[in-house]
Length: 171
Image 1 (tube, rainbow, N blue to C red):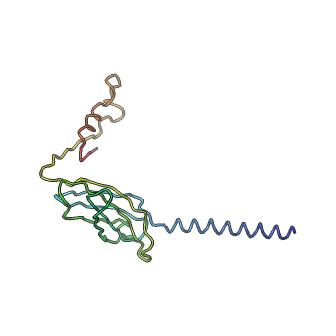
Image 2: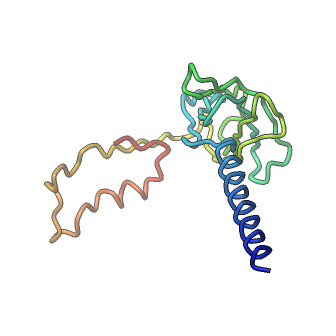
């Protein structure tokens, strides 16, 4: 009986070890987007979308003017390969002016189309001729603590900057 128990324990330990190894291998195979998504170069209905995968993959971008992605458009993007540090960028063109645009970005494995990263979402506002563009600049406004007057209430300028609801913040 002791031999059977020892064999059962050894077998269970072997199975548990294999499960842990399989889970670690699966996690290593997962396609991820370690740098999130970024938008830039916004210009009269066009925007550049950037992202990065953790290995060779192809970028996909879905966009819509509706937050629920009804009537969305999916664009197959470029490859993200090792020679670009797995970074890819895609320019979306012909977007409606003066609208919020909602975006999903994901990557698809090059050797297995069923392996996809978890999609990340974001949004931006396209600029129309009627939009006022608001920039705020934060810079190094209090390096090493200089310029913070606690008797005055600290750095009140940042609340005023927030209330402007800027499209761009530069620091």
